Image (cartoon, rainbow, N blue to C red):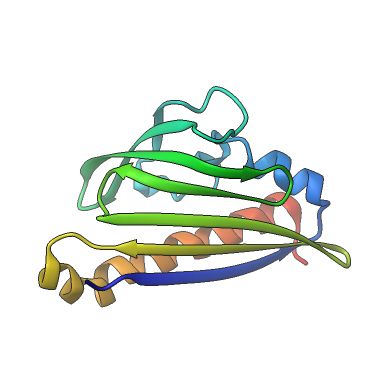
Amino acid sequence: MKIYKLHKYQKLPISKAKAWEFLSDPSNLKVITPDYMGFDIVDGADRKMYQGQVIQYVVTPIAGIKTKWVTEITHVKEDDFFVDEQRFGPYKLWHHKHFIKEIEGGVEMEDIVHYKLPMGVLGQLVHPFLVKNKLEEIFNYRKQKLEELFGKY
């Protein structure tokens, strides 16, 4: 059972309150997701993030194949962090922690994602060139988009 980890940091020249305001609005996830992913929120993003919130999406990550994804916000500490976990979707496990820390001149955002792929050994074989690369691409896009919105640190 292979569990993978993606760990990303980003600094932005904004207040912690502004970062939280943006990140705690589930509808903003569409803003920071590449258009080619066909990301659409189906249900659950009608209010600011709260513990127990279930959000349903449709994404098209690979070869135009639409995939339903359901996540639950399992932990929230206002202005500091939140955790989303996949309930149904393309991964066998998806656990994503989002931290916001005040630093001099802005904030540092930290993402820690633990994930497991389906299909056993086959999933492990495609991970390096398909899944890992796609996740890196998505998080690089997110970084770029947040810098466009809020400026470079």
